Length: 340
Image 1: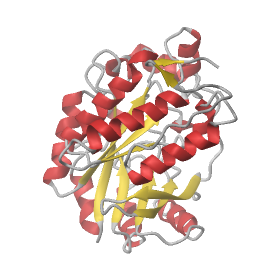
Image 2: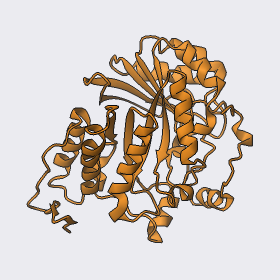
Image 3: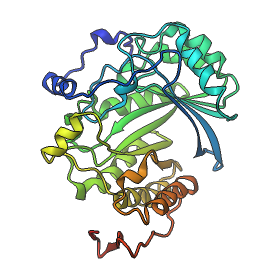
Image 4: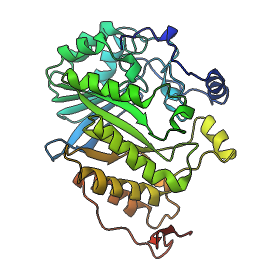
């Protein structure tokens, strides 16, 4: 866990043919400015204290992640070179000057915060100085890129550092095919490493990733959340798997990927709240990613209500009554989904 030079990164078991196909199917990058975050938003999230609080979330512009995951489209807002030392601090200034105050902040960079080719370590002190008033600082990182650089940054922060790692899925056949270049053992050891050094762990789980049958999506997502919590994650964010990177469209055409329905998304969150949040003694928080969630709905009549229900369950961490729509009948009947 001491890697920082990702130019020479080699992970045992990497499928070069998959990586080449992922790259070959890509659409064009989106033009970005190295001194401006490509997005920033003030969002509401339930905190560890049970209060729904604002969070400042900045999506930093930086060099592309070296891992070529099959499902990822975040590279579209990245650069092909390392940003200057002053770029990330300037991005933080830009975003925070346009957002209302908050006590918690997420610095997401479409890859790995502790990839030295993405976020220059020489910028750490300037970045930390801008985060002095935050109780919680969340960054994202691959378990293979944990090491002394993490401890250096942690020690610069008055608040608590939380590292989010992509678990994706515990399905034994699906995870290796995602080109994640990570095993469950590596995730677990990475989580242990962070917890032993007084940092918090957040995990990302995919709902209905490619190579998974839709009927199994809910159960495997819940199992993945349970695994993350057993590894010590106090927050798990479930992300409905989306297309948009070229590779996913190819997998959809071959029948290897189907987007989850919004009913599946609702059921997954509700099941996690019942099986994980209520029953597990560590009192984790489980959230469903709500970005562009209406795209998964087949009925315009009830889409907004379903998104509101999911948002409310995120904030309250309890299962809420189902939305019943007489127009599309998008409800469960005897365990089967009804078509529109």
